[in-house]
Length: 266
Image (tube, rainbow, N blue to C red; front, side):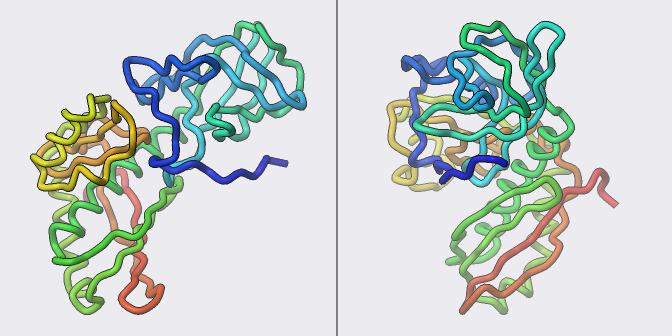
């Protein structure tokens, strides 16, 4: 059985900044610096109940910020331990494996389930693109929440319902134009003042930034920028076609937009 926990959002998550997380006892999250890393070497820092493992560094993204966890394997010599779940507990990234056996001090290799990760990268970048398309298309629209999964994502919005329904096709086309233009997607850690200037250059309010001297920003060049701890593709062309699946009413002028990514533009 997987442990349940309350995932931290981006405003609650401890942020060390710099070129690495350097606080004692905190796992170095390699996925923040390169979402395309598929393997890494690491050392076991702690093991609880035989199956809950903290490493000194990891490529596995934990559940949080609306993004599911990564899976894969932790390999010690010829032994393989399947990673079933990854979460943040007391500010540390913990990996649930399928069986006991790992010990503190073990030198191991992490191997990522790349197909799962890459689907989530495409979906997360699609969410950023579609989010901006919605905001740019409908005045006074407010995004209330968002989440992605392997096969689809969703955005909960507050807007004039009639206007939203009338513009959904236009919004989808605007998002796919950004995909077809194959724009750069830049994920980087910035000093707070630089992050604030970047937000201002897009007409965004810097007060939305999480606390901390340095902040990880994800920019879809000349389209959108946001503070984000998720994994993303390097170019919008990797996303594939964004398709709005349906709209569902969730209350007075609150609607849920479901979307997915397809492997082609047809």
